[in-house]
Image (cartoon, rainbow, N blue to C red):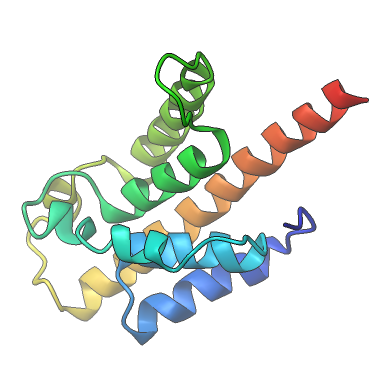
Length: 154
């Protein structure tokens, strides 16, 4: 894993793969995995394939936000029941949620894309902005928190 992240490259990678056919959630996970050089199976990307268009087209949570939440969980989530580190994961996810809601205008795909056809250029352009902003904020949270851990370890 590396923490020497070029934010512009991270965002470009997410946007490029989004335009190649990955959906929003997949694009965020792909770019975090690639740029942090994570030893993470591509199964994580596959696990996020049901999120786009608000959970398979249901219109609920934006897939970019859902994929970003998976990335926060990868770094700061728990692996055993009762592990109190879940509280940190919740706090970081809430920070991401609030940022997304403020920056993008909501968290619900149905609301964010109201009046736009699923495959329209207008919707693709808007979702591209959401993917780019979300992957950057996610990386910033991860880097900040890893830096805190490193300081504590010193």
